[in-house]
Image (cartoon, rainbow, N blue to C red; front, side, top):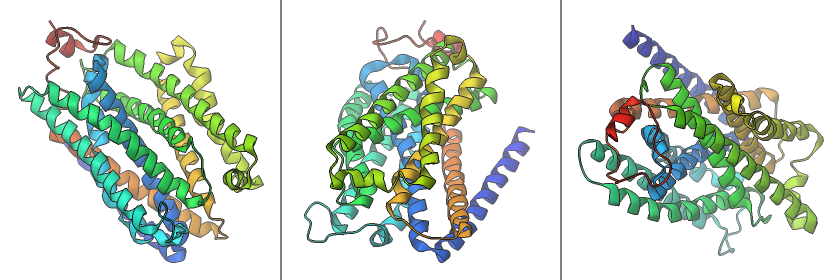
Length: 385
């Protein structure tokens, strides 16, 4: 029965992929500029979740937060999707001149530097994610790779910070050139990590309910994930407010233009929705311990954050070009592109979930945990005895 249900699920995903591709082609034919903006939105939405997950993984290896160990393989499988997302960035590289107003004489902002920075950042982030997963698989087979994991993560955290800042500036802030914000990279970092924690909670709960993580995930994981989601909810609220106040307090035309085109009457409702979904609802509900312990409520909160992140990335990207296009064109592009991306990412994650154990089979050879014992399921409690 499991195999049959799995086959049916795969067929549905493939059907979703095909329908998304057809609608995407129609959207591209109707308005190629709007289509590329939606494509960039979908790409960046999944990219921030994948790289936010990579950040969590890097911190785990550097500091030694052992309660994350049972979730490490899920983190690795989501982070490695960065490699395949790099291939999905090709349409943006090809059609970049349609959505970016290049100044070829500018030594810091031009088409050639955009392409070079994009390729280098995508390759570096993909390489780090791939190396961490390969070392982790090797550890399951008995190899001693603790030092390599830590060294890779120490180098990787610097690369992550640099690449994350560059792509936020070039891919997103570049849409509104010459507008500039000094806190833009940090603003996108907090958004990425908050949504990554929410996404990981959703996946962990999904595989636990299916029985794939039986005796793997324990009380410490269910307790700490909601606390970290709350933490990064507060951090993202702070960075969002800081950017807003820093820009408006100066009241300079070159800085306030970003908000001027995003605070017109028909888009204000989306900002209120973002505030409600990814800031207000998580903050209010996650303050109570009994709410954090309720997995169904936490699933709703996590879905709320992910949806809020999607809308926020849309508001970061699409309003940069005010277009008068039909509702039909908007629906074809939006629905088609996100159906296509969702199906692709799900197939990638599923293939990696099946290619190795869903959880690490070996733990780092430490005499004692550096930060926070595992307190996972029976499997990990027995490994430490």
